[in-house]
Length: 617
Ligand SMILES: Nc1nc2c(ncn2[C@@H]2O[C@H](COP(=O)(O)OP(=O)(O)OP(=O)(O)O)[C@@H](O)[C@H]2O)c(=O)[nH]1
Ligand SMILES: [Mg+2]
Image (tube, rainbow, N blue to C red; front, side, top):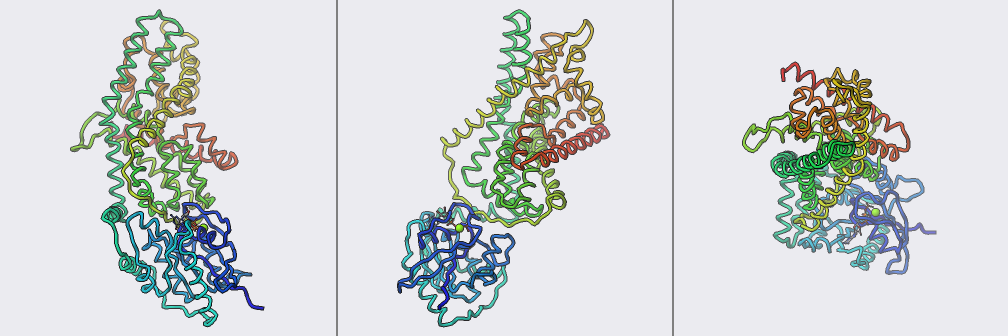
């Protein structure tokens, strides 16, 4: 009985191996446009022109035979003939993505070195041509020493030629049953050769593609890329202050005008106070930050739409690897800058359970947009509006540093976690980069509208509810003559109990009070302070002063800085804790997360306070 002959599809992830497998065998393997779809070997049959049939294997994508991840290990074992119950393939088909030919040629050379009869399927030639790149298959074949067949797997183009080539290679294997390995190149040598082969195989390339390639050369450069990303982020925070201020001031003036009108038009009673002190002072103090939110998201959306964001992930990949995370964590962590909830949900795309858990645990350290109002109000109140260098404002700089503190905190925490509770090896990651594009204005407008709506809806629901409850607790019971309303109220009594915990780190009573309802959402810290000061003020003119002025008058600089440091770390968000519970199937990890974040918040707020006091600020 003759042994069944086998051919195997190998190549980098996302090259279109499974798409070719399906086209050749009529199977229905899952294919999708991201790397790492196939994680096991799958077998099917194809019939050759001679009428015989041959077994075809679809294998997980891999970058090298020095495999690190379990799926790449499968590929290596099958190709080397090391897997029990699976003979070494007689023929290998290396699938190349024509649009990313240089990158794909690195592994291709390693495959060809094995000496097993190999065919290269130059797949996705349609995409390369769309991008303005035409490749010379014959030149490639000459350089690689194997037949090269252009294919478009999803349109079933080139399949007949590919099957013929498989039949020829199979015959070749029958004639020479023992593969003769070719000289082994090192990885840098293979990379260099890949670049040269790719260059020689390019028949024509449009100016646009060359420009985009050049742009990538700069933006993805190992040394230029990170500083460019850094400068870009810096500019964004400067812009949030510089551009939003006139709009924010306008909104603030509008809210005060309405408040003054309500005060002068209606007689003083429960409802008028609820509206002026709770709704207008409280919720209004958060809503005025809409311009800053919009400007921040405008930048983020433009970076996404142009294709830069994916490149930022690429640039960050090395840094992430050095702390034991993969670039796969970048998108979840990036989403966490809007809100940790979608960020934590996005970790579902991380296959390694320990990578995923680490990412979930550090996601709340990314500065979510709910922290923006807290940072903005306190910075506006206590940090002078000063240029410390041309184009560099002090307020924007402090804001940038706060975001940076969150990131640095996350990096350090990840380092510690990866060596202790989530110890394990980092998995490799290379992502396909999208095309550069000019952002479409309509997409941008829709994206901004969605962000603005999320923000306003929070203001109208959770922030409003928390503020009203706090207002009720602040308003009752009524103080006796000469007693402060704040001290007499239920809220004051509650905060007096908690206060001793926060005294050592410099928090005053209003701050402590604000922390409790701010567990519902961080912005509530702002509305709580505003409502507290509105209730607590002795006369109307004082009550109408903007929250910024109240804070400036009442807080010392060390106290204000300590509060900022607290919010960099504190897990002040019940929804995040709930999502972490759902995604980790239990209370253990969310409790761990809450515990370590509160501990960090307390220590850093305290350190900030005492260092600032010591420095005489
Ligand atoms: N336009 C075009 N798209 C293709 C072609 N071949 C595959 N694709 C698409 O490319 C994506 C990746 O294809 P897959 O077959 O899943 O890639 P794979 O090599 O099996 O990837 P892994 O299983 O992750 O290793 C899918 O979205 C396919 O529809 C092609 O020739 N042209
Ligand atoms: Mg696949």
